[in-house]
Length: 368
Image 1 (spheres, rainbow, N blue to C red):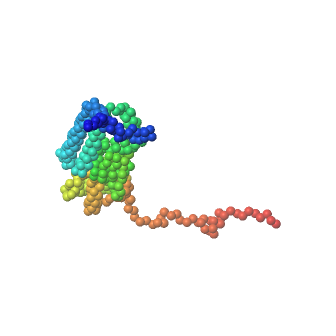
Image 2: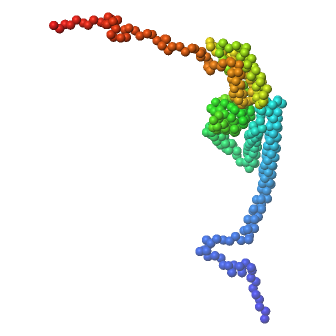
Image 3: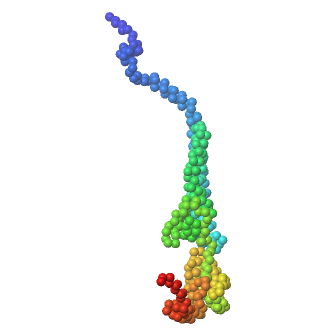
């Protein structure tokens, strides 16, 4: 006997095994099928196939911008470093004299070079990287007009709010570039004076004569008197009696000056011979003779003290008297202190005949 099995399709079997959901089960989460995943993958592949060329072009453009900006930044920073080092080396022999070497000492050159190099490198990096960032944003088709407008407004607001800081910074940059002063110089900044111990872009640090440290904002400095550039002047005024022999006074001073200029260490501190300039002023009972010499910067007070010391000893040895003021006090012989006092008057006593004769008569009595 032959049995015939009816043909059953796969779809019928699956439908029998998994009956269609009832209306109550229609809200359940449906698991994506393999066909849905294939469709999603196909759509993604098609989208990537359509846009891969655009992505590749944008990526290559951004990469090219970053590479060029990095290489340009490295080259500019190296060029600035070499330029600053060359300035530092050439500044070591300004004019080929010892004066030039003193004007630009090692520490001063180092700090000045570091400050200038730091400022130039920072400005170069800001410009290069800022331009590269704007170009990258433009590559992504981002509208830069609102960004630039906002940056301009923010810059103006920051400029008004921090104008003192900007003023200090710019003043410090120009002070360093112009080499107005450096570490080791003695300056008079108006608001404070002393020896420069640190030069910054915003603040200059000074040490005063009494050891105090002054922090001076660069924007507050309206004038600067540098006492350490070039040479200093040592001037000594000697006041003698008006009746002294001028030739003898000049000869004594010239001898002191010549001897001091040949001895150590004064021959190194003196950059010119000590000159007797002559009479500075002549009064009734005194006269002032002035001496002057060029000295190493910052050593004028030391030379003046030593010169006064030697002049006083030389004058004591030759018998020349120094008076201590604009006018000399003449020595007078001791006189009787009562010589200028008038004798007592006879009218000082009330019982003397002259006082009685000069006294008024009493009025007549009216009582009886």
